[in-house]
Length: 290
Length: 290
Image 1 (cartoon, each protein chain N blue to C red):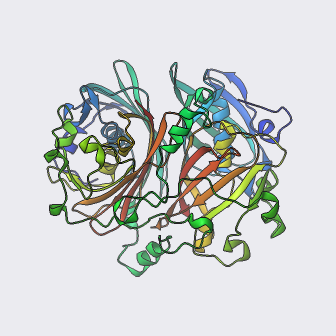
Image 2 (tube, rainbow over the protein chains, first blue to last red):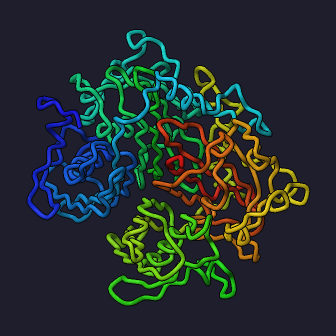
Image 3 (tube, rainbow over the protein chains, first blue to last red):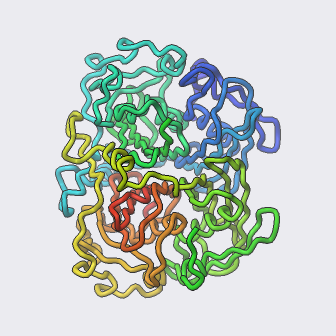
């Protein structure tokens, strides 16, 4: 994993081994989403860092996590177990606990995404061509009209920095990540658009390049688009992230959308595309409306 | 959970407690997808049955699983651990192992979906109204054109039973589930359509009504739509299922689609809608092309 000693993310996801797959760490107050509540993706990244320390393969490939209670800034213990250490993939589990008990139960499969075909190479091009495009829908009832291309976003400089719209007191996470909104969701103005789809740019505020471990946090770093349906907020129950490629440096183009809110639950899908136009992360979470 | 003593699914997912959260079971040869390889969703259902036996809440709500090696018909042990036993949700893990080692690592959060608002009631209607519809896309670049309505399928009797197109020797799973295809994907004729989207009806062949536990298997019960991109097959690495409601009896309308095949990996999304037109399951798996 690429780490920058001075980066906020690497500093705040540092874990200290205490033997037998156990790690001690500190949940930083620099990644909270409201008073005393740490971002779920940040907690997941702590688990990925600890488990990754036990695994020979460099990249998390599929990470799934169940959230049991809010994580709070302060000391935490992470217990990891490597169940399979294979040549091509390795899988294990990690549990982050604080004084009140288990906070996150995570499982992850690791691989080496460095050996993936360059999307610019014929091979990769073929692979990337092997997807449905929204104007190539032979399916009945037009059900294949899923956009599977990178968001066509305006230049970051001509997009809106949401922090210029409203301060986010107590949301320290907002200072860790730069956001540039191509279209400002209505909820930012207190007028939900009823259209829970958002496209925007994302990057670490301190210039750290994103890697596959950071993607586990970044997919959960934006305000939930379900706010555009007028709900007050939501709490993540389960989050799964698939890392599809190592991101190239630069701004990340993101698309977040919710298609189903029912029974008080909603999913949020999140896609991250790198500066080369390659899909690098695809995630979905199930959350309970507050 | 609704169980029918005589149903194939309930018989073949029976688990015998041996104390301390341990269960013994037999992986049946009635759910194999090729010679000696059990269906992943079936193996996941075995984990859900065992863990559910330890949990007071009736419905799996979010289930995530990592697959380490193929499961084979024969004896298996399932080790469960309940980590949080809450009033509204409970979460734990389950590991299914066979002689060669761990086969499936699963985590699941349970809840009571019986208390959910009836979609037919004003409350539920409102909730179901709170979704993007494909003709309600105010988002830029038309990126919100995601179909979030139940597949509009022809009557099951006028759809195609794939078993009339080609026998599935060795695929015993095909005899456990009835399929009715509204449109026959090209791969059934050996001519991939390049459009990996499929809509079809699904139900247990023996008439067992689907419940939230069965949904964990059913989302993995169809041939992967990625076959329509001309690949030979794929192996599931990770599968997450969100149970969104208890299914009403009758045929289940399904939509399976793959949007991204790259670096040898692809996702498959799977949605199941019940006979009342309610979304009951939403799943995604990451798989490696064989």
